[in-house]
Length: 342
Image 1 (tube, rainbow, N blue to C red):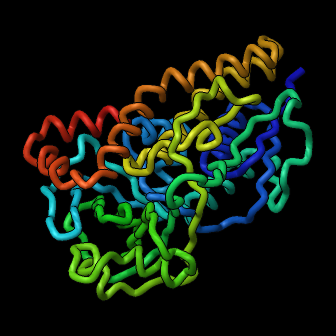
Image 2 (image 1 turned 180 degrees about the horizontal axis):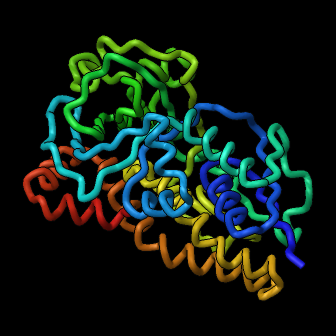
């Protein structure tokens, strides 16, 4: 007898997990509270180990057909000083979540998965066969100003590099082409006031005279793509500390500075698949499957999270300009930072 898996959450990790399980003949029901397609606060590019994981899911070729583009270079800028353009060790795959989530949902359904859209999981969190993929956990901020993630699509935005990151006193904003002449503009910001969509959009565009402000001076914005998220916690968490199996941001959120969240979603799903298959086919107890998934995810991500946390804290200080110069003029330092967060 093959037991069914229930997935709570239909973001990247949940859909990738469902697709992988269905390709191996495991019955899966997936509950997603929202609807497809939708925009999400996200850097919208996949690099490092996440891209091979996506290819093994059998969906990368289809995403390229749908307009995904490759980024071959990256550059990091302070407000008034342009950085060196670096060649990426491997190309990143850039695609809108509006396109990606919908395509993964279609693939899951086509494989015979039971997709329950507009439906929250209402069962017990201790139920066997339940995997949490509900995404980032909101956290109340008791010290200092809260981080706010914000994203918007625009056209007529010239870029010097495939991936650009712009730092300021309020945080940072990343830019990348996502196909069809569209650029994703996604930032992690903190400051006062950020109390309305208008003020958040103004902060996203940077201070007048800055390199970021010049990039976006003639942007044609897609107002429907605007979305934001508050209460973001950057504290690393371990999968072993969660009461049920988790994948993606439900485990922990890697500091967005690294741009590796999408990749970790696919990787964590892939790590969970063989253990869930064994449970489904009666070869493991649920406790054993949960333990093995947590151990695999913590082993894969603990170092990456530690390095990413160090970089996040370092670039939050006023010394960010000096750190960027070091990374720009000592190529191995930049490459080391890039590879150790992927």
